[in-house]
Length: 149
Image (cartoon, rainbow, N blue to C red; front, side, top):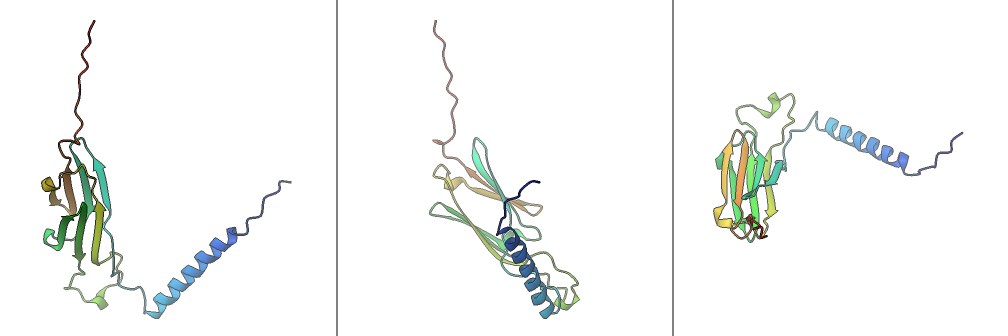
């Protein structure tokens, strides 16, 4: 027979999950069904680096480029916007709303190697791409080794 050590916190997490679920179901029933998905949401972003730039891609489906504001101040890149619920459909007509609507703000600290004057943004098929070129000092340079005999 194998002895298993007793973990007093194992069942505590399960109990907490059950209580949270019970609380959520009770609140939703009191509101007459599922609540409209409004409030704060954060669009997901991918950030990667190439030899010449740092590139950020943000998913902003259903938004126009005029709904998005991009600013750079004190080495901080800030993206603001608002995704609005379509007004041509009444709230009572919805059966389910799973997408989130509302205003958002995302801020990112830029590394000192970024040339802030060269930052560009483009928007295509619901994806915002911000290209932040590296300053000339930050771009790696290849140094060739000469062989002497």
